[in-house]
Image (cartoon, rainbow, N blue to C red; front, top):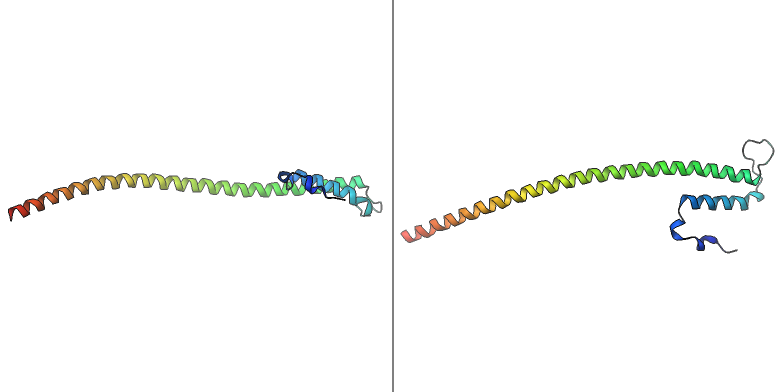
Length: 127
């Protein structure tokens, strides 16, 4: 038989709900071939439905754990973004102040150059 993976949209292939459905379907197909004991029923083997329920509960536990790990990772990234944003904003404001100060200094130095140029011209004229 052909795989259904070709019919699953790419955006849902890695989605946890899609994994849950795939796992449940796989468990339903494989369960009759296995004689594994679940749910502490002693020597009586669990029914296929009980196995699927147990697998879904286990999957739920894993999905919740993955969600917590993803949230922790996101929180760390969000904190990094906030810190970086603060550093960049401070750097931008410092650079703007420095640009303003340097602009004033340039105007002052141009005035001094003009003044010294006039002095040089007067000194050459006096010689």
